[in-house]
Length: 444
Ligand code: IFM
Image 1 (cartoon, rainbow, N blue to C red):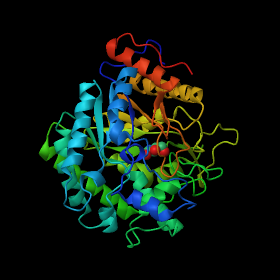
Image 2: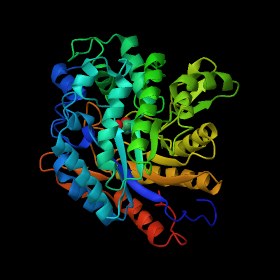
Image 3: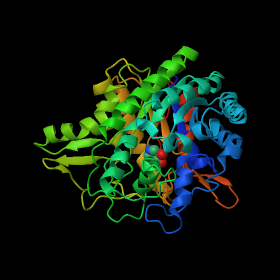
């Protein structure tokens, strides 16, 4: 921590989840269809999501735990596939469910940060062409208008799309790999995201170099995103933002970008910039007109003159194979601020580590918070830190990479907070109750 550092008043400390990863039985989604089609033993999918951790029913307990631990924010998603399971049919029960979640968060003193789309889409949307269908932005905007009913319960921060850059990259991955993954739509374009998400998260891929986040199946790098998907996603984001603002001008609308933390080796600055441009920077630039932007960082990718390099041979690896690199979030904040400029506030909406050893999570989080504090001390407008993840959950094909602050027994669904949850929660509580006298981050 910088000498004398104090967390700003109102700084949010929270944790994040995503619907498909925690709710269970997301049966109208494209990912659910892919999980069924892939079948046992599919190389891209070790396990199906199934009941996940049953947060669809147990969200009050999850929120009770977070609030009790001292957190001041909870990022969760609302699932389009539940709200609009068939095109044009809005499930009023699903809308009521998510409205109750928003009220539940506020009642517990948790600031809700709500994501409209976190990788999964309704199967009908994907089957008719997904994001590159000509009317995809209008369809997404119509969903956003419905979502505004939920957000109207008192949400301030709303994210349209989670990691649009990974959606675009994953589409490219499938095209490049011509994976032949099952396609529930039969259209050839449908399972793109679902299959790629599963491939991306496969923790068994040996020597998986993950350039920034999810994906190591391609040696030491990410395929170039599909520009058509990139453009379509930006259009969809803007259409949703307009719909949200029209419905409720008080909403603060942004999107959350996967920060790969590309680090140029000496002499490779131009190569790093060229690599980062289509994979990350174009999505950050699209956030310049937004009310905030979400930073999501886990590790780094070094770039040499010929492109991405593997992690150093002696690097500590996490359960996803990623290099243990706590300062990544600080680099990501600075890179993001450099592109969006000083007028777009930043929320760290994801940062964390997949490990079975919670002492490594404590060490990682301590280092990450120090990096966030340094950015804040340097005057960057960072409004909060939301750890990934609140709960151990379904990591897109496998339950093995445990990212949670809270462990979950997958038979009984019993929740058990880890020491990392207690330490981060205590920091959050101290920062909230006495922002001018907050303790240092958990010792690592
Ligand atoms: O679990 C994912 C999440 O869905 C998106 N960001 C990265 C996380 C860890 O891989």
